[in-house]
Length: 85
Image 1 (spheres, rainbow, N blue to C red):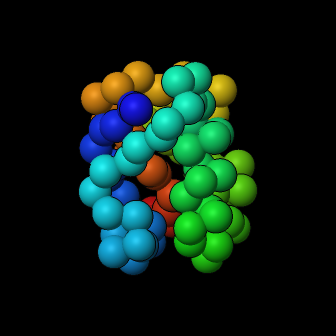
Image 2: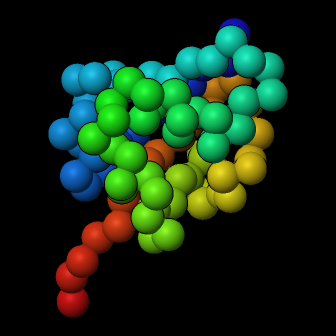
């Protein structure tokens, strides 16, 4: 089983209770895309945020494409779009 820490930023921090501070997967070749699909299945309110072209995911402090394959112990940070000036 793969496991690691999960960090939620911005509006996604509202889903901390549902998602917790850890991620896990029984699939050895888990990608970011697969993990996000699992999160959206658990918290459907996330779907619009995750679908945004400005939504990013950082693995171990580096933004990665959704095709990136996760490793045991990776820190996954979900970075929603933000506004500001």
